[in-house]
Length: 276
Image (tube, rainbow, N blue to C red; front, side):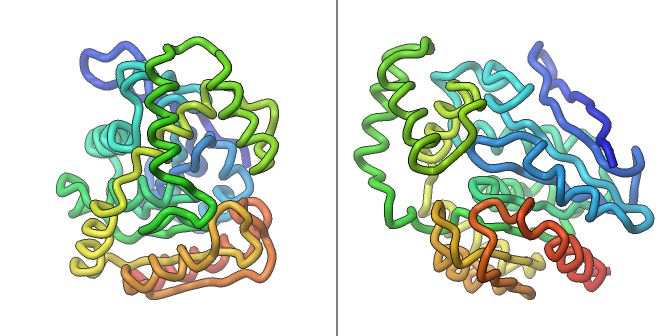
């Protein structure tokens, strides 16, 4: 199944937010797919068709600001992009799109975005549940050095938007250490880094606890061999969310929306049907 491609534009903003849709133009339930950092709608190209195999269901996946087809200028440029501005853009889009009932699905850093978006009061009446796949959670991964990374990000921002030593070094970390594709543009890696270092873990915990208090149904899946985000992070987040379903894979690596797509599609659909 091939998706259709659409855009949404903020009032008085010339830069569109790009998204792709699988399934019918309108449906009773929409899976809203939020990719990691970096990422695009294509991260869900294996999973999304499996989520819309039933009747009256569709799925949309955004290219988040500064990723893929969506310009970073939608949030004001490289100097201003961060986790909060990206989440605010998603909330604004979902507030105006004609979606009757939503299930948010976040992969990797999309896990943080899911917590932020699910906490928006404007979306509460249409939010049916959240699904998190190898998510970033309520603490930094063990390999992270948050203080050093934050100050390095300040240097990157102050150096300007041009590709330079700092942006190339950042790119090399993602490509050489985390094995992201070398075809990804350098600016997408810069946005990914800014998104990571601006994660507010204290606020994310407050949001997760609020989601649990509101009894928003949660599904969490993670792989034990994920080398980017250790599985304990997903397990801890699942506990805070009081997740109804927790799926653990022995294998699959970080990209389980691809490597475990068939099983995930079935598991998420079964969980989603239980919410009706």
